[in-house]
Length: 298
Image (cartoon, rainbow, N blue to C red; front, side, top):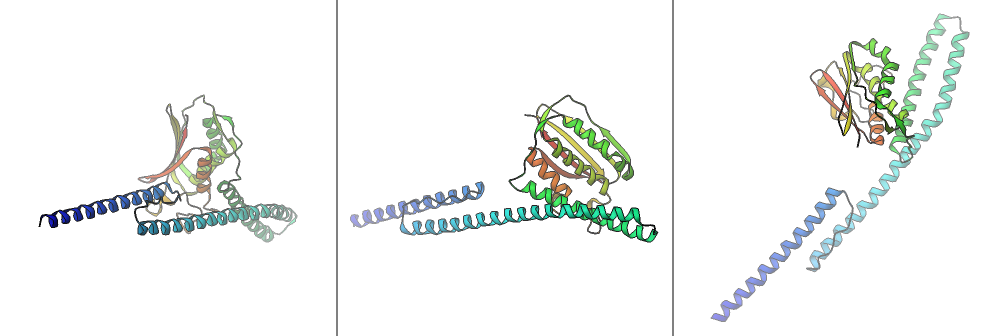
């Protein structure tokens, strides 16, 4: 009788140890999968060697990971090919469009008919819109590719912002009843690309005077670790703005808004900010939309 009890205890101990080992193997497998998901790393799962069934499961998971990796690489190659295609097509369109504008302007100068001049003016405006759209597609395709190069040099970003404000001040005055510019002047020099930085700020200003109403404000603040610019403007209806989508390509808050807006300006601004190592964010505050550009100083 005692031997039966001892044998039963031994069997139970073996089963418990087996169950514990299985649970340990499962936990290890789950941990590896969680690491792969969190790190977005398509690494293979390690074999435990505990049993054939576990090894078979790991083999199937690894086969799936290999397939996902192949699809990911192929997908990235297709994306890069599409970007190069858009860049190439956009580049090829720019020259004939410039020529078209030149011919339209010649016809305008030679025409004595008011009706002809009216239609030629419409053609000129539509051609400029198409040219600007292609130019922005070209810029965005370069920014999203690995071929974009920044021409970095030492510059004062506050002075660069002041210059952009001066350039677009007439448009801001036409769009807003109240303009507040309060820039703290600091004698700082940062390594940046003035050309790209100017375009970033220019796109934010264009977005403001194109879609803003009544009030516009631009100010900055500086700490030991960062320089921050804030651009704010009032909008007609904050309920129609999906702030989390503002930097998406071709996103337009108002689907029926005026012809001439490409919906690429903010997307390009954010891509430039990322390329420069800056952070561009958007938020809504009551009737105002705010863009916050953070430039690290360290």
